[in-house]
Amino acid sequence: MTSDEILALLRGGFERWDESGVTIEQSGYRSCRLRLAFHDRQLRAGGTINGPTMFMLADTALYVAVLSSVGPKALAVTTNMSINFLRKPAPKDMIAECRLLKLGKRLAVGEVFIYSDGEEAEAVAHATGAYAVPA
Amino acid sequence: MTSDEILALLRGGFERWDESGVTIEQSGYRSCRLRLAFHDRQLRAGGTINGPTMFMLADTALYVAVLSSVGPKALAVTTNMSINFLRKPAPKDMIAECRLLKLGKRLAVGEVFIYSDGEEAEAVAHATGAYAVPA
Amino acid sequence: MTSDEILALLRGGFERWDESGVTIEQSGYRSCRLRLAFHDRQLRAGGTINGPTMFMLADTALYVAVLSSVGPKALAVTTNMSINFLRKPAPKDMIAECRLLKLGKRLAVGEVFIYSDGEEAEAVAHATGAYAVPA
Amino acid sequence: MTSDEILALLRGGFERWDESGVTIEQSGYRSCRLRLAFHDRQLRAGGTINGPTMFMLADTALYVAVLSSVGPKALAVTTNMSINFLRKPAPKDMIAECRLLKLGKRLAVGEVFIYSDGEEAEAVAHATGAYAVPA
Picture (cartoon, rainbow over the protein chains, first blue to last red):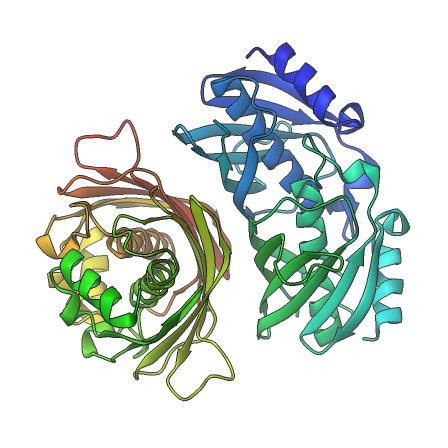
């Protein structure tokens, strides 16, 4: 699937997709790169971006990489995700770089690095997750 | 901290807390029970509640259990969270039951079971997470 | 499968099973309890039991709980395991208590608490894992 | 610390280190590369290498990368490890490539790719882990 086809599928499946702030910067076989626009509602005590926002971005990146690789399987579901929060992200856009480590018929596994925009030397979070792919 | 004190701290730290839909049903030493009110925006393709919503609920439950046990440390931060999605949750309220497995001076570790309201025989998700507690 | 049938299968699949020090204290539908006999080779710097030994015990407990529930599927394989090390275990036997949180046709997910023998108030480790069950 | 200094520390802390089959191929600031010699005792049902062996290799790689970066802290301990098993490893040597994603004063977080020797296009396992570093 192309980025535009994936976007259409996301808009169909998630009513409020356009409020999410996520855009697809690149997608291809077993990988993608997303951007999340900063918004005040992502902040937590201490002035940094909260964990659930980073989880959402990582989860979306895995979903996009799976769709991009196997086609329109809207019902693919995360079965497991493990995320390490490494640094407190500044209040700015975040970038997710996702790569699938395994793409089986029923299970895909990938990793996602999350960076603050323009600071790609040190990730703010790293996640690995598994997706069950329907037949 | 009592549930009311924790609630005041959450409202102070998270501007949009009251939009979150989370209420504290019980909190005590090393444990808590939260409820998340169902809202359409939690839905994903397939008509079930999306993963990031469950992550947010699990993360909040760990935070509440930590605050309830160690006092007002608003800057306690999640360092790691691993979540397994077990069943597709029906579009209704969800309950989080959290218990801390370790409460050290610098690190707390806990587990969270997430249930659909009224269906506590089988969890819809299970998470374990670690919180760094500031001195 | 009964504990004796599981033991026979483990001996068939793992040449050196009897050197492992693991015994099945209880097994049933979606649960089991194992014991690991202490041995000097399990020690690490600091005089406590090393992490890989606890991982092995947790992994074996999930395998036994799966076999006990679905029958002789020797080729069931772990797809994911997340383990938190909570306390430094004393040099003595360890007990693993395992419970399956989900038992699907293709995927089982469970949690394991590991205790030092006789000290079951506080776990020394906690693991969650997923097993792929062959058809 | 150099690879030789790390090896001396490992031999001091783990009585049976030389039986482990692990050698340090490279170590440096925030990274290392280890080799695990194949041995029959690593096999499981199905003729592939068992999970606990891969966990041990990943855990050792994180420990070596931490020692290599912060000096002789023999009592550094793993607090959390999450491992995904991606492919069934052939009965041959395995290589672990480790990189630290965060090196804080008290906490180090890293990832490890495990490959079958000579087949580095697709990893057989991937782990992320956190190490508590003593003061």
